[in-house]
Amino acid sequence: MLRLPPANPARPAETFSLALLVDLARLLPAGDPAVPAVQVVISEGEAREIGPLRARGFGIELGDGEVRLPGALLDTVLAVGGAAVEQGIAETDRYGRVPSARNPLVVSGLEGEPVMAEAAAALRSAVVRAAGRRPVALVAPWPEGRRWAVAVTHDLDVVDRWPGFTLLRLAELVRRGHLGGAGRVVGAALGALGRDPVWAGVQRVLAVERRLGITSTWFVLCGDPTIGTMLAGDLTYDPEGRRASRILRAIADGGHEIGLHGSFATYTDPQRLAEQRARLERLTASPVTGVRQHYLRMRPGGTHSAMTAAGFGYDATYGFPDRQGFRLGVGDIVAGWDQRAQALSGLDEVPLVWMDRAASKYGGVEDPEAWVADALALADRCRRVEGLWVGLWHPNLTAPLGFPGAEDAFVRLAEQLIAHEPHVGPLRELTAWRRARRAARAMGILPDGCIVIDAAPGISLESPDGRPLPAARG
Image (cartoon, rainbow, N blue to C red; front, side):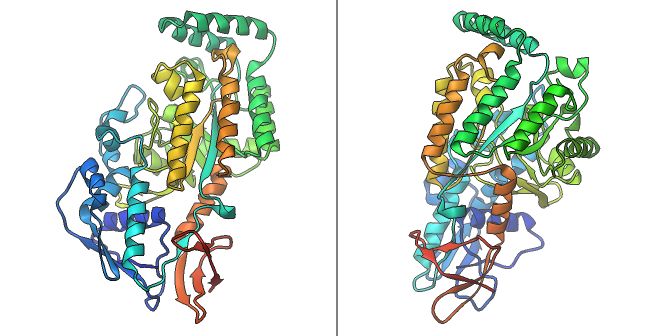
């Protein structure tokens, strides 16, 4: 077990960073002073860049019954995992997003590595070595004995007027010199005239997920489209319309989660977010707890304050729009931080690790098999740290809408993910699990060595080598 230093009211950011690191490490904090535990000590130290800090084992030191964490590490956890650096950047791109190049991991060339999870693993290893004869219990990483997790998500950006989107995509292909691909798109689009290829694409995605036992999360736009919003690439369909209603029914009938895809107007507007959330709840007759901003358009900190005020429980926006990787340094779910208020944001953050259009739209990569290769490589890194891979596949990626070969690629992606036996679930369930795991505490040890825990049902313990440990609720 682990004993944390008393929270310093004058340094709430330090308390947040330590809690985030302990949570990612799956270490079980002692909730009672009588429980034998390894003591955490925060030491002063010279500030270092992320790369050099990582190269020297994150500066963690150990003694008999204690581990010493340098303040520089906690500063890095805050900067990256708490997005404190991005919350202080005023510069934006044309969509109001903080440029990816300003992210501290991108600056260090480490956006492709789950650096915060690596730091947590280093802490866990140090605690085990420092414990001596003291008991060490870890919280199991995911339900049902699974060692990692997968969340498949979809943004419903296109429902009506599909030929217009095909024309835009054709222009993109021609501009990049992909004339062969453009020709295949024209043929597919002509063959789809008089049909509804968007609905067909949604049905195929749902069929694949039904076959593989995947329960996914769908983010749906829920505002009033206008000529202006359509030209901007924002709101493009009526959520109450016949086609959208059919899609929403099919998603709900499949047992999938529906979250809000916040329109551009919700950027930092809690009232607009609350209105769109309430409207979507009326349409689906179910709670809407999660949100992802359209185009990943958000103001770090400001948008999240609006999300909290609008009643959301989690945000799934933190991902790179123009590259793949770990924007918060984790493939996992972490508590959100409000740098301006110097307090928890009230949200769980579910960072997006991989997105199809980051490769094709921004990277100019038109081979869907290359997209899948990147997705699986990132999934391997998430699995290595027993984390969560969150991927985004747009259901409109079909041949008539400009993406030949994409549908088959999605099948291969889904099959390969499932082949590695992750825990799979919608984000609402995964965030609830992670909140419960984060709250677990050791309250005592019985004479037979059984650990008494204060934890929700379903939370289990294991030894550092992965063996199940007996636990009693108390």
